[in-house]
Amino acid sequence: DRVLVLDVVKALAKAATGTRLIPGPFNLQRALDAMKSGTEESRLAAAEKLVASGLIAKQSVGLQVSCQFVLDPLAEFCSAYAYADEYGHDLNRWYDMRRTLEITGDSASGFRSALIAVVRAYSAKGLCTDRALPLIMSEPIPESSRVGEMPPAIQRQESAAAGQAYGTS
Image 1 (cartoon, helix red, strand yellow):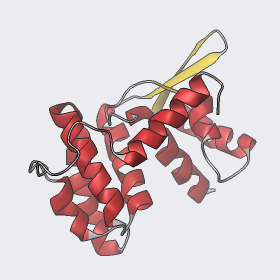
Image 2: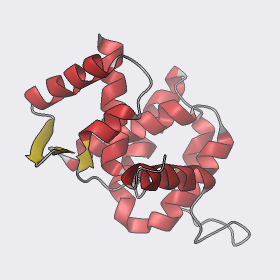
Image 3: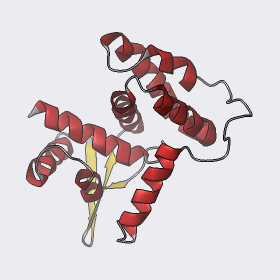
Image 4: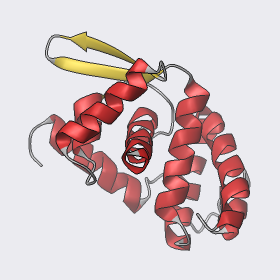
């Protein structure tokens, strides 16, 4: 099912870029478990299709399965699409993204470029608001904002990830 494969791509891309929006290895099972669509078997089958097609490299170390997109820009663009789809027309979420981009700075420049391209391309198709564009451009955040703190949405993601890592969630 094409919709499920797209959902899997978005989930894996967000797992790959993590809370710092920088591509890297991710735990396949944890990323698939975070999804709500499809069955566990169908999500795993979709992920295996991505591995078989060469988009994602998979490595097993003991019982852990680690994956990584073979190209960082692919992870960045797929993650940017996932965020644009998730945030849609919610400007509060886009303000959170702006703060996250400010905190990550140049280290997430690939993701920022991908996000700008995705918003430019897909806002006209209704995926997200074009009002997000000035928020994610590189202008600094006003001093009155919570510079240096992680936005609430990212704090929740990090808290959930820490809970999974220690078996508390």
